[in-house]
Length: 465
Image 1 (tube, rainbow, N blue to C red):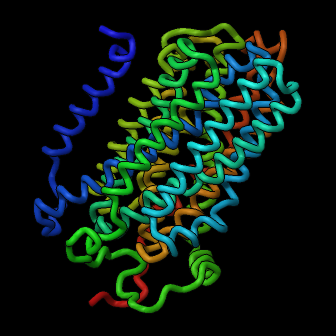
Image 2 (tube, helix red, strand yellow; image 1 turned 30 degrees about the horizontal axis):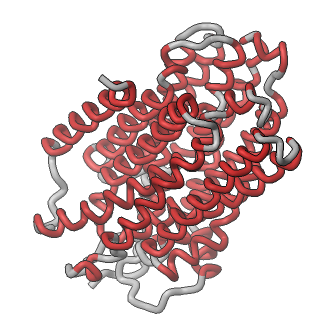
């Protein structure tokens, strides 16, 4: 069996098992025809795969950070700064990209995300080739990578906003829990592509191809999306319907982004959600982006580090499906209880890592933490943003919420880039204690905030007709 198929097979089997289980679960019957459900699938599935490959073009840098450091191309400190600036750009880009997505539609902006990210990945690969060939010096190459990665993250910021904007008119509130689970699955597949496929590429091709391959894949899906994706059911020949979210009954003109933001931030629940997602961004990337560096520097490599992408994918799939199922079928489509349960898991996982840094159980624990944080992210950025922003303002709502995720990401990148050990000190696991220590208060704050959302539901603007 080819090596790539040997890695992919467990995920395909897991997805097949999940598909069978989901078909057996009780359905939320809203009267959709089989034809509508089929067309809806062909709308969100290529859209979702485009989003997954955007992840590959986003995390390919962190997936290969140890190798780039070993080749003296990008050091740990430089990686932290590059990632920090890119994450900060992503975090504030929602001020522009959320309103643009509401104005232009999610179909147009997912095409912009795929095309822009593809271009930036090509240029990052070219920059690496120039420095390897000695055509530019190291300092200039790092500066170029910082600018290009930040531009890549600007285009990437259209991704989550677009996927939520397109899906909002196609899914009722009662269906969106499982949609949030699917969102988590797509994130997980993207992480698998980034961490395992890109490292596979790095082992068999020159390093620049780590950036060229996702660019080619994104261009392929851009072409496919042009012909398949539609923003609303009516654009695909079906009747639009009331989704029972915050836009329900609001038949007025679209309000400006400042008015939308003002109305959203007048809701206490939005402040709590963005604070939770800041914590989620910190924790998700504290685990995903630094575990491989930890394992490489300390020499504590093993099954988890060798199969990091596959394990992240499996954990994310399970976390997304678990979160979506209990949201729709246990907590009556409320998102707060799901976030509370998963944040409790994050607190527990952080405590375990604190006491097991030198042991293999730490690796398995951070995989479990990934399961929890991807589930939270799917529920809040992928689903609550639709509920509380409504299909009319889903772009601004998702931009605000997802923007705070990446402000949290930027915070951890700058923090860990400066406080984690380097050189010979990095070889001793005990010197990595600041890694879980910084996560613990963030996990506790996130858990406390999540419990405040226990009974939160979207408020309709007016009675639906």
